Length: 287
Image (cartoon, rainbow, N blue to C red):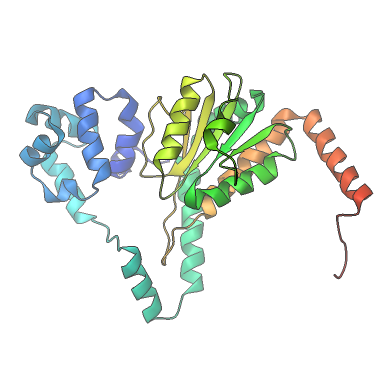
């Protein structure tokens, strides 16, 4: 179990974000947006960029578990990660033979780190919100569309009213218009996120629905867009980020939801199996 003193600055900020003052949040936003800011700027420069006082900046880093700004900056400079662009990562990957063992080891580390940081009470809350929902909305744009499609494919087996946004050929506002305060939303925001995702999440909260966000480690989400935020480690060894931890988390949530629903989920699965059997859609043996 990691303590505050062993967590990276970004994770410390995310853990404490909801309790920060407005001026401290401005400083937190600068540091979360630019991971090199602590290394590149002095305390005065950082304060100017965040429109805060030097005293606020000093208190902020003490609140994050550092004796002073200089201590935090020294720590950051000693652990600066090299984050290549996608083009650089592609070039490096193409120069040598892809190492499958390194790829698998990184994915395993992503899973382990994600499990260490996910809180059991937040996982339970997410499952409870989805179980209580009359309609469950799955939202994922861009790269997250595949994750959303995967989540819906599992959830539709155990819960009857599963909606997905976006759906090809249909207008999103018209689909979204039927959301109600008795609903819940599973929003996928891993990697590159769109304004559409944040807008729908905020509108969902405004409509009274509960929102569960699955995202990566460097994202902060306030209460205005998510009821529960579950973060996964997505570090990749090549051109693309890893989605092993998000896929595993989605599978866990769907399994936990099925167990939480209980008998009605079992009866739905059995009915679906009977339809497959009647229609002869399931093939066995050689094709």
